[in-house]
Length: 236
Image 1 (cartoon, rainbow, N blue to C red):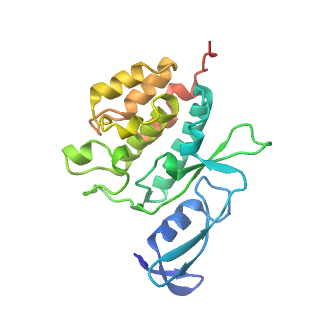
Image 2: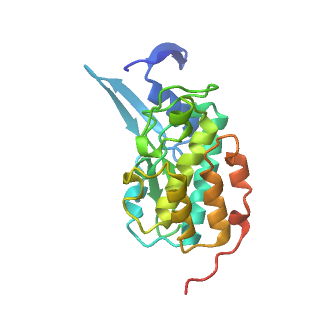
């Protein structure tokens, strides 16, 4: 869709692409200050829209970063940033809809002890509303209630997707979410049980994967979870 709606920009009426609007809402005014990659400009071509965005100098997609050795301590710091980013995105009224390793950049440099999480690709995003029908996003990160109930909410969906990301960071199964088993409770429970991580981390993951969305942990509860304040035992 080339135009989502007419919006006043700098005192003038413009037809603004939805993805651009969502990024402006979530990235804020200062380039590079937010977890969301900042949009700089857009232009309409014949049958598509070209978005021009901030480009961090030293970064890689989390999907590629997973191939490196990631210990629980680093995974915890990345997840902490992701939870904070998700809370911010929802607070401004936006539902990303497609959080996954391919849509997360890891920014790093010599001066930064902990890599920085940056969120990209709001192509499946939308405004926050109560209840969604017809899942939009990557199917293997789809929450089970969208199939069983035919409807889903932004909060529980985002929590499910964050759980998927963390499980991929911690698991040695590279094709974990290509098996088609991600909606099998026994498969998820066994996979979490077999992880070589702390019990707090396992409890955190289990709370993300409760199949009843009303019982699933919330983003705010994730932020306050004991895992984030616990120390990670050294690797053997």
